[in-house]
Length: 75
Image 1 (tube, rainbow, N blue to C red):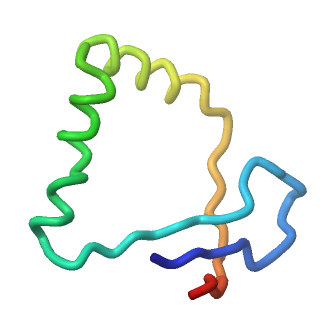
Image 2 (image 1 turned 90 degrees about the vertical axis):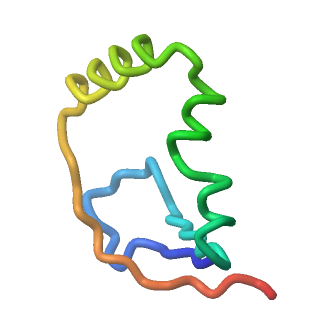
């Protein structure tokens, strides 16, 4: 697991402070948490999810690419 913080102050947006990445030990471990399996458990109504995701995309006003720096996690 690794955590990252924005490199620069940016435009003052305060909607996130960390990005966390998880590296799985092997393919089988990753598949246990694969998006389709997790999505199916969280959102059993696939059609409703597709409609809501489309609406969320329509509401997105802007997108930012942010340079990141790794942040040391406690061991």
